[in-house]
Length: 174
Image (cartoon, rainbow, N blue to C red; front, side):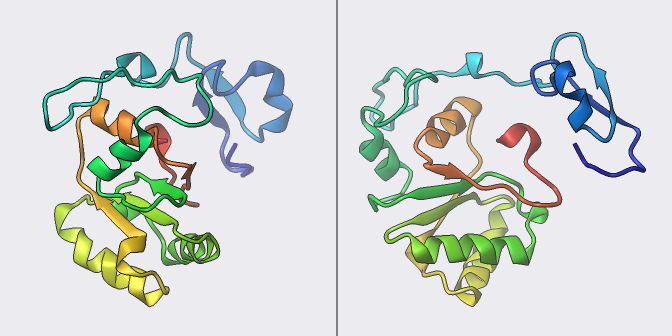
């Protein structure tokens, strides 16, 4: 819910916006018959390793350690064993206050890092500058390029925590 009295309706489906929870919404629910989401985890594929091998991705129901997770993290440039916090939004959605909040989380968790999309590609120097301004070191920020869906889902699987933006959230990215 947006929680605002000036928004009359919210569009969703029965999975995202269960009709029995209508009383918790400020808006009236307009439910689509199937789903509003155009992507699906059914599209999950094996990770395309550089050496040509293929591995079966972990079951979405599996909780805990993922076989080969350390190697997969290294493949994407994350060399620490600490917590990996991810945000896959396009960078125009970020606001400085939320970025500073994420930096505070990282400062309290030894060896942790924040993985973000390098999108647009030219943004990396500016993001590294912003990171230094809020006290993050270079190794605490992992900037990854856009990737095909199968690779994106696979690298998302090794994130320990997904953080979202406040005002312009991730939508289908999360």
